[in-house]
Image 1 (cartoon, rainbow over the protein chains, first blue to last red):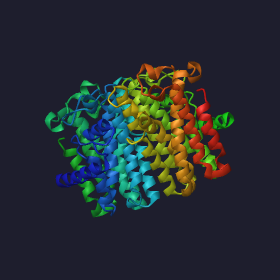
Image 2 (image 1 turned 30 degrees about the vertical axis):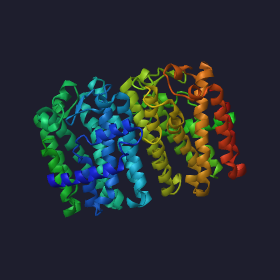
Image 3 (image 1 turned 90 degrees about the vertical axis):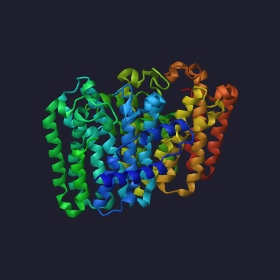
Image 4 (image 1 turned 120 degrees about the vertical axis):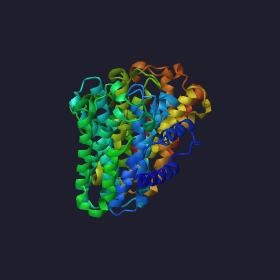
Length: 292
Length: 292
């Protein structure tokens, strides 16, 4: 699994480098800020999931690279905006100063906006190479829905409101479902949507939903017990910010157990894929065993 | 022209109302903020241009309403982010407190993000009703390109840098081309892109480019000589913020003349359309004669 993730990361990084505008193009400050945040040591988990979903559905992972890069672009956009002083006010991310600390708040907002936009540009511009236009449309729409007020943006708002005590802590599963889960679900659906294997959309959707929860609960757990060095950010930051998290609401041990249960449910969901689901199953197990 | 704009505004407002999530849906604060900014008295110039472009190419304007709404959504997103304290720090817009003044900075950033996303969702979800998938793809891609670092976001960065004296004032045409021009150009191209009249794409593109400049130069002029009440925002704000504008670089009289020249060039560009271009021609003349 480590080898697959490393190889996927290399391919995605190379594709990102060629898709992103060069740092020398005007406005250089913006392009520099975008590249700074994109190449700040992300795990590339989401794009790897896109590649694995494509492979499970018989597609050449090479062809879905624009979608994998788009997903990483929107993930980076969300981190840049979440880190802003008016939101999580984070000064440190993956071992580097956050975008607004390095480039100022205005450029950080706009770098996030630019990445948000590039995601759609890359998918829509890939056109025929990605698949028939009606399938490309569905993938782009799936992404837009995952990012919307019923998904990522809505989750971030609920997260902020929960921190302020306006939304009860018991909403934590719903907050995580929207904030992290919807995008991971969309990644898992890329294979069936682009290959036209509609009959496998339901099981990969269920897989993605369980995987998303497993991933986020593990993130919460690592914020409590993880090593700062490996994570590249301050641990305990959720607690300091009175974030609503699974460990806080359910206790650390129960949270760990819930992450494992979700990973098992993810693996069970793709049983119909048979051996084609092996990589995805390994990815689900890896997600709850990782230490960063 | 006033009657056309009023009627277009009514249709677009009704369509926006049905496309936007209800204010009662969670997270209510976000949906309220989004609706507050969208219904804060915009002129609906860009969506009206989309409808006019569609009509000029023989399409039923009713079918392109999702695109018209998408364009208004991204325009609103750009205003919300431009007004933020870290950017133009504007507290007043169209006669109302700006989004961040009313809802706080975090919600304003996220309301902008949500609208940015909805634009793509609406176009992509319209699907068949809008046209064949390959044409819908091109319209969505055209919008993404117009919003990107070579377009609106890049223009906003150059605008900020010019204000700080990092980019010379002589860049004002390039700044305006990106910041305002690219989106207006995209609006003008919706008709030929969706109708498949590829032979008319070049003349409507040229029309859109000239119209965008005419529109922005007039905006700059109105900031100097306009009436605060009609505009619904503080006049003289560009000067106070040492914004680079056409009147500042070229003088007020020459700027007025340039706006008229651009409007004439826009009208000339659509001569090949014959009588089908009448509404677009009137729109170009209106743009430089308006007082708000």
